[in-house]
Length: 123
Image (cartoon, rainbow, N blue to C red; front, side, top):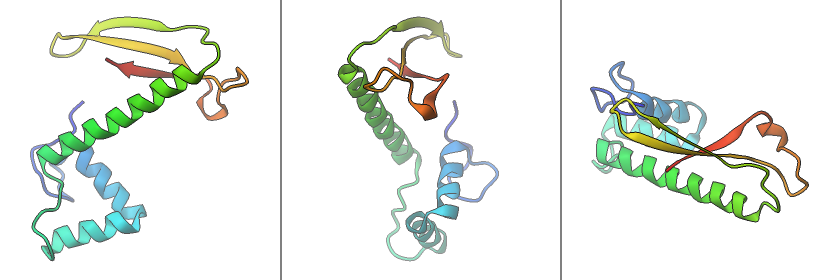
């Protein structure tokens, strides 16, 4: 999945998912809106933390936190009924291992918001 586009500027059709997410967050989040407006006006620091290196670091950091939470939920689950492992090549023909674990609550009931949904861990 391409997160970066051909440009690294906001509100440009050439940017991709990461900067589009930043633009979306700026519409609804006051802190991000303020940061984006400072970045666009050039006021304050010249570091806006939206470049390609930071994008990769943020994606990796968020991915790591999500992975930790999923592993934690699996560890505290009293009884896991199934774990599914699957390998499939990605677009670059590199094998990717997927671990699929159905999410259940302590009462062994699927979480209401996650019915018919399983967590997928990319290892």
